[in-house]
Length: 107
Image (cartoon, rainbow, N blue to C red; front, side, top):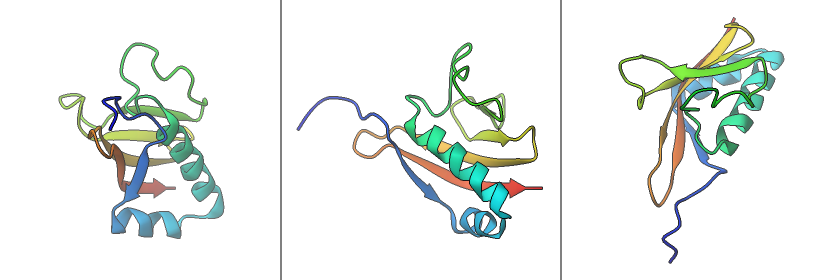
């Protein structure tokens, strides 16, 4: 067994409610959420911590903590200038790091 830390791509799971919201979205909303998912699961740090850490993200997505008082907690990926979002947590467990989507929305 290697002592090397896990690296992307990360696993992603959805709460039942978030999955239902995603499935009810129109096709353009689902497409953007799936594109955001691809960005998150391949990022070295899905929380994009640090100055300009999210500079490589496409212009239509921004990632920030859901609460500024909890920078290691849930984060929100704003999509298309706030037209939609997904809320997620990232747990960097040694064996199975995972992103969990807890909420999705599309207007």
